[in-house]
Each structure stands twice: as structure tokens, then as C-alpha cells.
Amino acid sequence: MCLGIPGIVTKVGVNDAEFAEVEVSSIRRTVHLGMVADSSVEVGDWLLIHVGFAIAKLDEDEAIRTVDFQAQSGKDYQQEIDAFASLIGGEDQI
Image (tube, rainbow, N blue to C red; front, side, top):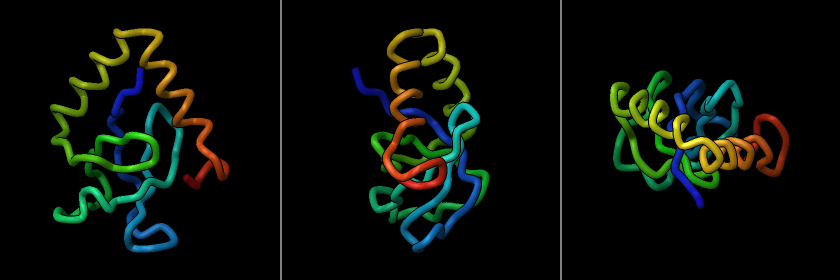
């Protein structure tokens, strides 16, 4: 099962204006912002991440509730975190 997971933006404009660095469970990755291009993305914003793409912007309360809920789901959440951690290109690249 694939999930979108919330991540907090730690850097905007990584290598290109369409990319940002996000942190999910202490793992940092670069994600593409093309699907949320209609809204301004800044450091500290929460984004819903799926396979290297930010698919939605979340408010902090919604992001935290989602992280808590997903963490309770066990195996599926851990598989998504593992997939996020193993994205091609090393620790800071998609």
C-alpha cells in the first residue's frame, strides 16, 4: 500500500526553484514541487509527499494528526518511510 506522508520543508530551491528539501522521520530528501506550484512553499511548511513529489500543502495541525495516525498503522507506514529513505540518488536527492 502506498501512502502520502507529511514532511516539513527545510530548504526551498534545491538545485532548481521547483525542488525543496523536506524532512520525514529524521530523513531528508529533495522533492519536486510541480504539483503544488500554485501555492508558495516556504521553510517550515508541511507538504504531503508521495514518491518524490509534493502533492499537497498541509497546515501543521493536519500534518501532525496525519503523522500520528499513520504511525499507528504500523507496517504500511514503515514501508512508506523505508521507501522514502531509499529513494535513488543518496541522502539529499530524489
